[in-house]
Figure 1 (cartoon, one colour):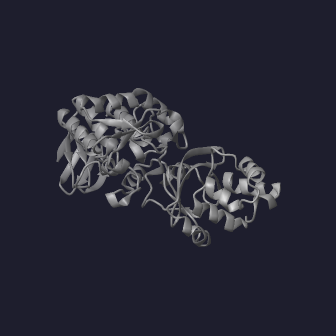
Figure 2 (cartoon, rainbow, N blue to C red; figure 1 turned 90 degrees about the vertical axis):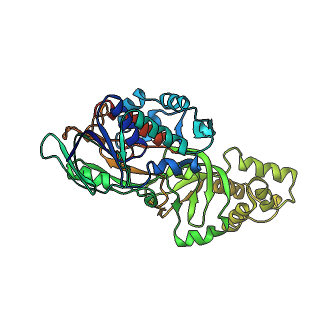
Figure 3 (tube, rainbow, N blue to C red; figure 1 turned 45 degrees about the horizontal axis):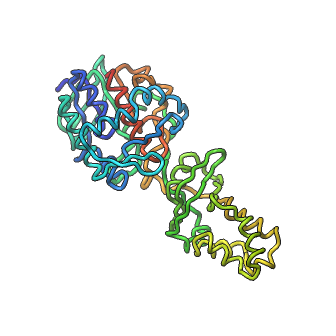
Length: 392
């Protein structure tokens, strides 16, 4: 039986950050992970360059049953704090659109930095370890593993959610929460492509590969970024963003020409080029395959001079307010994160500790706090991990 002050389950972004902070405080800390490599989600993120934070991070970029839960942690460890850490290791980075920060060379730079920080703080990282039964028979937690039994005062669950199972993601953290009677908000895939039913899939199959700048909305929530037609339905940043809000059985709205005014363009075309075919004009403002699809689907054809304002209004509506009802999502297989998780009502927003189980902490994606696309979920990992690290 080995004793530790702190055992962190999960060698990902949140877990390593928490372990580093605990180690700095002189706490004897062990990180356990069933994978043979640490921080796989960091490694594959951002196309291998890791979108490690966002300059514009604020509580408004997060959702959950109580999105205000994230305020305290984000305030105490900000994006500027993490950027300072990255800069201290002289890791080159650059800003992309909307404040997204990426490594210039490789996501492995961030992983190396975190492992170096663990080493400096005296933290032990143990990989390829299968975790068995976890109990709390007294004031200490007992953790059974295939490499021996362990005990600790503070147990931190940083095991993430089940999104991207190919890198070893599981629902382990949710099962452990249930074991200690903590409530869950039903998990589901988020930041994930949306799929069509068979009939719509067949109709739109010819559009696969077409990308447009679009405003995608659900209710009062809207995002403007790229949208991509796929063989299964829709993807791209704007779709991934709205997927966290979309509810099954409901429609989304798509404006495929956010900087244009299709009605004015059509009327001007009728005035200046009355003999031009309506589909030719559509092909001038949209990708030609998309213009053909809209023309075929709605029966828009013929010279501009022969079209009524009623037809023009229908064309404008089809482009600026396409109403489409997805049948579902691609699920955890391609979801970047998991929505839902350990209910924040059961946790302290200051310490991340379970209110009814002293010494048990939940951080990162396993908690019911989910960020928008663009580095926000990594910032939640850094901030929540840092918060717990001060108290474990």
